[in-house]
Length: 83
Image 1 (cartoon, rainbow, N blue to C red):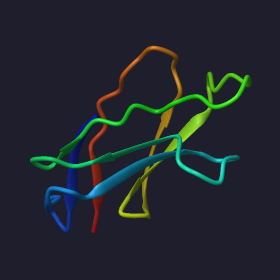
Image 2 (cartoon, helix red, strand yellow):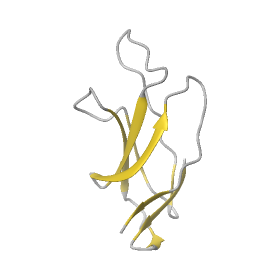
Image 3 (cartoon, helix red, strand yellow):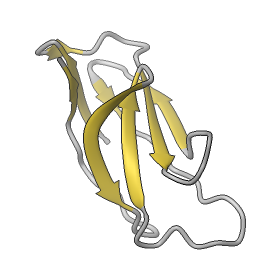
Image 4 (cartoon, one colour):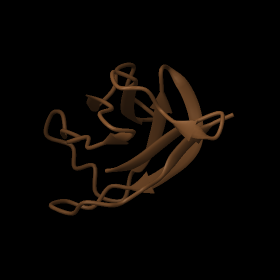
C-alpha cells in the first residue's frame, strides 16, 4: 500500500498496480489506484512458501524499480513512481 506518482504527479484513478514474484508469469496481486493511492493484497500460489521472495512492483505494466520482501501476514507501505 502507498502512493503512486507518474511524472511527479499523483497517478490518476484507475491506474493499475501489480505485484510479481520473479518465477511466475502472472502477477500475484493487482489493484487500481484511487486518489493516487493503492492497496494490493498479494496472494501466495500453490504449496511453495513465498517467505523471503522478492516482490516486484509494476505500474501500468512498467517496472517501477521498487521491490519488497514477502512477509506472511504483513503489510508494507511503499511509494511507487514512474517518470
